[in-house]
Length: 291
Length: 223
Image (cartoon, rainbow over the protein chains, first blue to last red):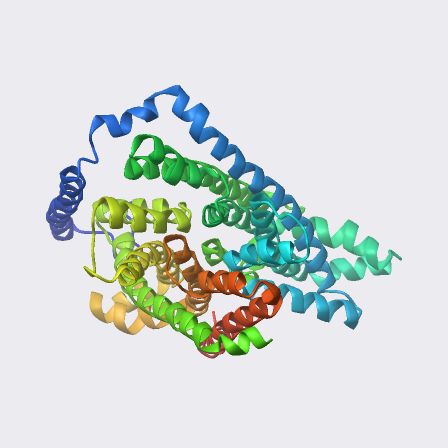
């Protein structure tokens, strides 16, 4: 890595190498000092005490307190992911409809739900549902919020993916005498979905991260386990939140690697006519990961 | 509808807090994100490693968890205080720490990819005509990088506006939490109140998106 020209630096010569080594040493010391400062601050409050971390070495902390939360998080994420994919497929295709009366309402729905924060949608599901006389569980509210928001984003991804398939593909389909829905179902969608797979998986990572919003409405998810349940038993909020963060990071990194692997696979495959990179850029690319 | 009209000052106050959260954490995360990006493109493996670690940890952690860590962990356990007597000011600044820490990881990645999209040949040509490092950076690389970065930064800002609602997790009375309070106060006017707040977010994000889109198109680098 070091000895390669980048857009900013040439391959370092002897003098630059010497300078780089000196700077490496200097910055290494600075970073260690920062780490030491943070460490002592936490140490002053006794956050590294063994008894605060001990609960995580016992099986019952995991089986009784953390795993139920993790299961709830995964359940909400799985249900919301399936519903959001359906929502996205339906509205993404509807936005490309030939009929104005389908295209315009679909566009309004997608743009409106994309503009509203997920947390507001969750609150709205709770209060709107009970206004309509329904009992809305925290699970249902979280799934509703995640579905309509991420579904709208997925709709945009699907639409961008379909538009990125070369026009000749649809024209060839029509020339062969396929109906509109056959062209969409047999020709456009399979290519679009393959090309958009990385973007779709990235959005599902966002969805999984957003299940943590359930914490605000007291849904018993993984964050709730880490920030309310475990500290209530052992008074160890900081260690507990750090452990829970590690669990989230592990799951998301695994999904991230899946996205990268899918991307590499679809790049390799010659069957895909739509260029995944172009399609992803059309949908906003990596930035989408923030929300 | 009456509920929205009656509570208009309250609603506007909540959105003013949302705007303050956005602007302050936006500026902090822009600066900190550029520092992180500089670390990640530097020739020093220590800085590259530290930057990569920061970005990967923060990007893969839910924002809610980060904000709860700032509010309860730093605020309550570590006793980090910004104001002795004003609790809401305290949680305001704690949530800004969380929002900035999270957003800066994304800013870093946007800036870094902006620099990386400049073709290597541009820098080689600049060096070949004898420009120094700073001249290369100032005259050749940054003008191209900044242009490609505008559109993604615009969508980050858009996401940040919506992400400020997560500060509700530690009791900051921004738009989402205020909306919930108004739901409690006006149980029969849930839909008008919701539409009012949704319109507020559209008003905040729409001009920004249009401006970023137009700027990005006008400044696009033809390659």
